[in-house]
Length: 133
Image (cartoon, rainbow, N blue to C red; front, side):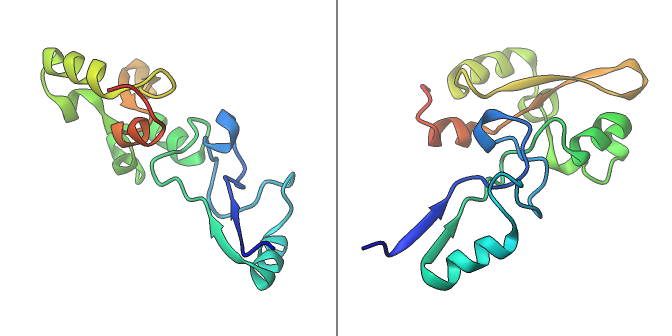
């Protein structure tokens, strides 16, 4: 007997097994449509994965941030390592302590030729994924 269904990332994604969502308001066609999700929910208790700390570097929000930097309406979605950790020495120590191989920094080429190190997934994601810290 099945009492419930847990759907792992069903959103359109650019990779990482669905954990690099392009958006959260659509269902990847490989998994069906929202109507299919609703049909499952009519028969079973449903748990749907929502990774609030993940988004694809190919997402519209991140691409807008790359183009406009802090002027982007989505800038608050991304963490600038230098602003967050402060001095490079602190950053390197914490980076080694709180990141794991599949997560960490993304060196992003920003508009007008500049670049920043952006936190691709916060340390909590590493801890939840069983990363070493």
